[in-house]
Length: 258
Image (cartoon, rainbow, N blue to C red; front, side, top):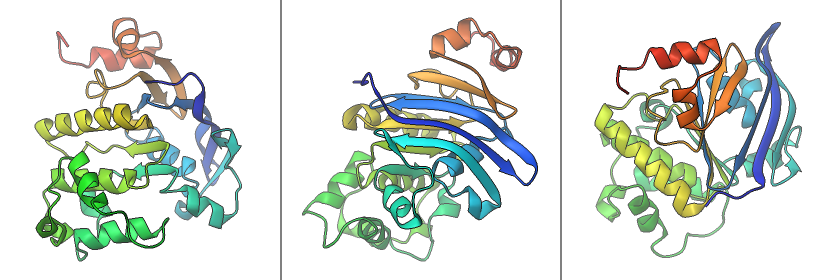
């Protein structure tokens, strides 16, 4: 169920040196809503996710503006407070499990470290089993003893999602989480994310370069072009009646009959 009031709102600009990458990007997310932000490579998609997590400074960038969660201003909070927000109230799913998961760590260790980042003691009995089951991964102890390096790409992506939602965040930022997957696994992950958003009433920003992939998945689609959102609307509106020339070009590039 999508709530009426936004749970997450932002208006930000981002720069690398003298180059503006995002220019007054505005957005809002409501609980239970999936907003897909679609743009070509180099359009600023990953810069947006790093900006919203307030991590862009570690990549040499600067951000200005406002980021509000449940009406609370997050921009400019002390580093310690921001670390508590990241991972707990705002979850993050990166693009590649190969790059994001330490191959030398066991799955159990990854779960324990993610839990311990924002909680004390041990999780409730059955917590990990329920979490892994919710992302269609084996929940038994034998699976959790495996090293991250032994997982398939699809399993690794499911584990990243599990780690991203472990603390039941109000907002999940998913940055190209299906780009490294085959078509069948991609479809499974999109279905999984949709079910998770609906079941937990979580707001989700799904960042992608693939307009076709988000067609039946999103509550709303936003088109990012040259650092600005040039068009926003329901998927049916975007596909049937694109207004901006760039959106029209994207829609024309889709397979005939889509």
